[in-house]
Picture (cartoon, rainbow, N blue to C red):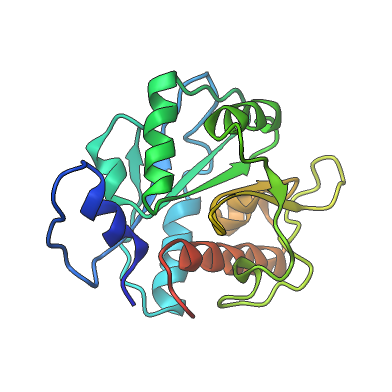
Length: 222
C-alpha cells in the first residue's frame, strides 16, 4: 500500500515526480484558516487520534500534528487536512485555488463542526467546487466500514441541537475528497477524557471514526 500522500507530493508543484519514502511517517495537518474562527480548538484531540491510529493500525504516524495554512509548502506533506472551530471560516480566491488543487491531486479535507461553523463552511465549500454539491455520504461508503463498522454512519458525540449526527461530502470522480461531520463533534470525543467528561463509549466511537477517516484518506485497507 502506498499512501495517497505520495501522489500529492509527486505532482504538487507541477514539476517532475520526486522520489519519496514509499512508507513515510505521516501526520495530520491542522488547518489554520482566516475568518475569525477558532481553528486551534480542541488542542488535545489530534495527538490522541494520532496515538489511536499508531496503536490500532500498521500506519506510521507522528505523535503530533502539523499546523498549516493554505499558503504553506507543508500543506503538500500531509494526506489528511483537518479543520474545526466554533466561528467563521473564510478562504481567499488564492486559498480556494490551492485547496482545490490539493484535493484534486490526492489530498483529503475533514471539516469538523465544533458547533458554530456550519453556515460559513457550507458557504466556503460551495465556492470551492461550485459544480460539486455537498451531499450526504452513503452509509455503505468505506469510511464507515474500513477498519471499524459504523452501519448507522457517523457517531453522535455531543448534543448540540439534539439532531442526529450527519456526514456530508464532496466527491470528485467517485473519490470522497471532503468530509464534513455535522452535529456530532468528533474532535471533542478525541480530546483528553477530563476535558469534556464524555462517557468512554462516546470517546471510543469518536476515535474509531477518526481511524476510519484517516485510513481512507491515505488509501489504507484496514
